[in-house]
Length: 473
Image (cartoon, rainbow, N blue to C red; front, side):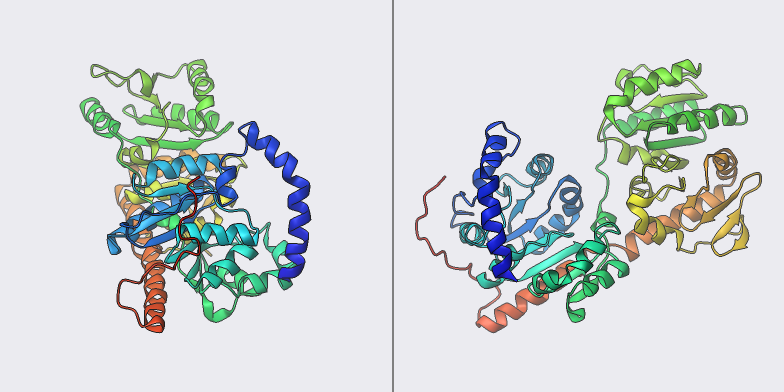
């Protein structure tokens, strides 16, 4: 299999080299030298042991943050080398890592490049996230003699048929990792179906469940404004998509008749839409303030809408919510992350479209908090007065926009139900679905086995470099 793969890879690499060089010269393929293994030795001799973590793009880099924190806490002398294939992932990694740590673009999957890359960074272990299955890289890591873990492993519905059809390739590739730590039972079954040894596959959970939003400086200010104006209830509608704001604003206008101190914090998903959404609010004649216009003297207008026209603040703003609505779910765009409001124990409402986060949504819907206020219709379906039937677990999923107003009204009026939902969401997040401990336990086990096999003590020496003094590029 490797012979066929490499016989195909070399002609393809030669064929694509002019296009690759053209893109690199135009700045559209950053880090070409690094991708070719042209890097200096890493780290300098006085540094500690190295772990190489590969996260293909921005989403995986963000998911890796809690894992990096736990790695540093357990191994204080650790030196992290993080690789990401995209410019946005690389930039985010630069912000996340410490100054003494290293961010690189990963090597191309040609055997000699992978060997050169490994000789330069000399890792103690290699962790690859999600579904980055690179035949030559995996084989060269194992030839280098260090543990290889596939962490946060997943295979999407779309990709699974392709992997299964080419199982004869992937069963050889998946023979290389020491462990495959999958996000869910379904992902674990799929890895086994495409050739991973069952004894190597474990369900560890999704690293995204370990993410905690950074505290934004604006939150205390918004809380003080809300308390001064006696805002109640507060609806935080986050990551909304085109067509969704219209539905939310219509619901706001109807609910404001019953809740004259209602405050909605509206956060569109994409910054380029801030002005268009602001104009939509004005067209409807609703009182609106923009986050970017707030000053220490600003007073809230209630009932009213605050347009969160900034980035990086939504996650911690959920802390203010009486009820959190997560957008991209009332329109068919696949939904967004429900974990940030769950961190704060907030009752979460979503629409029917959650294909981008289906496994996470299913885990929350299958949770079973106390739900005495809901009329149980069986099979996870409940009824809210005046609404269509909804699904309720640790979140509430609406069948459509028609259930938005009665569901929000019901939650605004029932503090005990809100508390039950919020506590169930936070409990699920904190106790059941945090995988970092499982990943680190497996890494500990593999490193201990390697120490025992080599007869070394607790501090394992780095693999020897083949080139004593490679040129610094």
